[in-house]
Length: 498
Ligand code: PLP
Image (cartoon, rainbow, N blue to C red; front, side, top):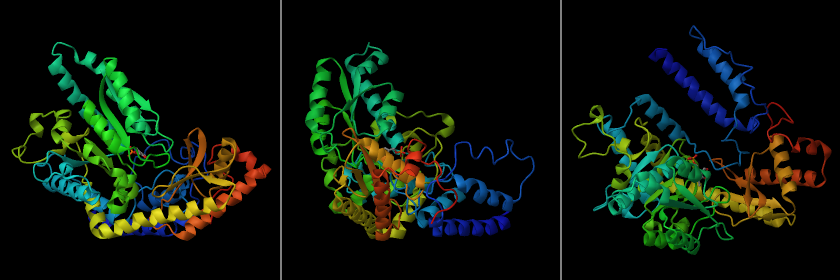
């Protein structure tokens, strides 16, 4: 393809994407296919000769689209939002168009410098203390873009692990690192994301998973007690992972209580705000951040709740040297003459190569402005409250946990089984898509406001669908029962639905 063709195809592609998003409602939110569907449609071998562009695009519509779950669909209420907006799309496009790889300042100075600047912008926008910012006086902190919240958790754990081993080595110079490692203990709540368990597994450290209170919030006293017990047994509490906005029900661990405990034990405190972090752009939503000044590191994902495409997880540390000490290797071919004066982000994470991701954030923040982003977040909160009001109005349903931000956990009063049936039948219909969670051993259904431009009509429509299916399930209509035990996406209808 030459540049002329690229211009032409580029226009067509933009049209295709715009049409897709404009007419997304005509499609079924989840695909009505079985595993392996694509294998039957696509050749086993790659083509020897170049193929026609038109043929490739035809296959997108005929073969790929039938297997796509439409995360931007107004009927998609599963997980958390997948950040999306036109400025972000165009920022991504430009970043890829430049095609630079910013592993060091010298490798592409603007790539590094814009990353530092937007991380300071965002840090200020969510009200982080100055010590996390790169450009504030006497700060040792700074921010970096990682690929995912899981990476932020893992990297922070590696930094804490390296720091603790260095400290222990000073006290016990002749004890092997492996022996010291075997004494180290990390902590998180039962409600923490599974990426914490995975990080501990990869970092080869022990993890204690603690019970939160009845509101799914990890409390300081619980942590203090287990840390004391562990220390008495000769273990070394070194890392605590907390969550602001848990995956199952968007609950908040109590940082104001946990922070002083971490300080007392000299443990690294990581705060994962993957979804909820963006909401702190609104000052009235910052209550759960009380105690953030105790954090050693903090992350949130604009690719969830800030209209920015995946991948984009922002991570700040209070002491960047503790982070980089765990991750620096410096071969000659990557060194440059400005190393002393600049940031080399390859020392702040796992990969060497890095995309120009700061551009899409810069485009989003400048295009929406802080006020535009606040409006988006407040709209989602308002719509979640509207859904909550629907649930509360109908006595056969209950709201299963306090409602925070754009997420409502609800259930039919009754058994887990009937709720499972309700969700399976709704998902199988392709009319809505939601996922479950388990709260205090109860099966609950998560309803998340996901679409960027979600409306009151979308919420009311979703509630009507849920009510109808609930009635069907309560009356145990046979044609619905048939689908209960199957894959929730199994087709009852094929093709597009209105
Ligand atoms: N932490 C929380 C609180 C989450 O909700 C999620 C995913 O939804 C994650 C971590 C994992 O995020 P990622 O996919 O960016 O690794």
